Image (tube, rainbow, N blue to C red; front, side, top):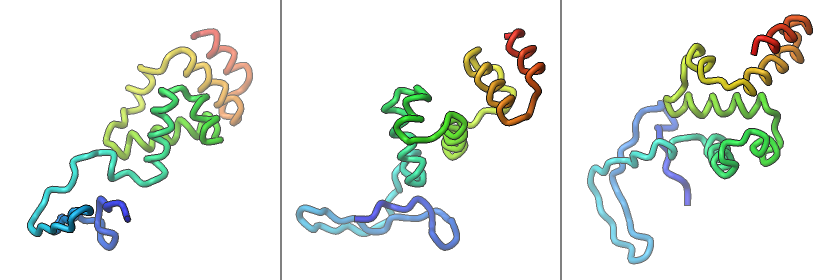
Length: 129
């Protein structure tokens, strides 16, 4: 059985359910039915899998890294993609305010690794934490 698409595959428009049927007895009903209001059902399969793993790991990034065999920056990027898909993405200022010290330290080290800052700049930033 296929999962219910959340959008029209041709134009991306909303879909209306016009017929439902019982798997057990075969009863069929026709009409205009409201689609599920489940905000998670419309996610693409990759994001649904990420959400499931993220919840199973209780939001612990290194657990998600192990489960999906992806890096820390990839976990953060997928979480941001998930939040955007759900309409829950914060602005960059809000993200900076809610970042805890460990996340800021990790972000500084990641920036250093990517060559976005010098070792001296990273050391200064780490001291200011």
